[in-house]
Image (tube, rainbow, N blue to C red):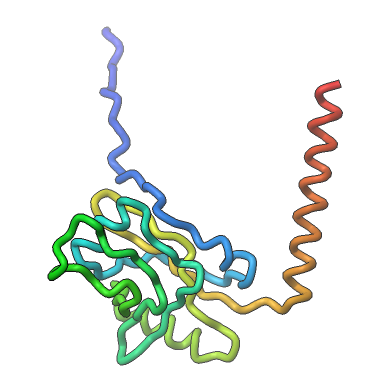
Length: 166
């Protein structure tokens, strides 16, 4: 009896292309929970994102009137677009989440010390997605401890790498 051969199926999940990451948030905040959200954008904003013209380092999200908005996100105007359709670089942008997720985020941010911080923007197929984190701010001494631990880890890895070469 002949052996059965299954056709090799290509991975059907859409590929992610990272646009920008918020490294400052990983240093300044303790990440409690992450979630994926869509974002409502204009056409010229999407073209600017494809060109990588975005700054998310000082942005944050708020829950207002049952909707989540991203504040202080800078997307540069697209150079080739007409002047009539160009956008305000710092406008409030609505995030696309389910109602139950918005209620959960509202409950978490109502507690003292919690905030919503964008961690990264990426393309998932043709759509722009955002990784949104519920986070708690770190104190200055906590940041220093983390830096010291990372430097110690790097030194150990360098020493191990150097010992392997000998």
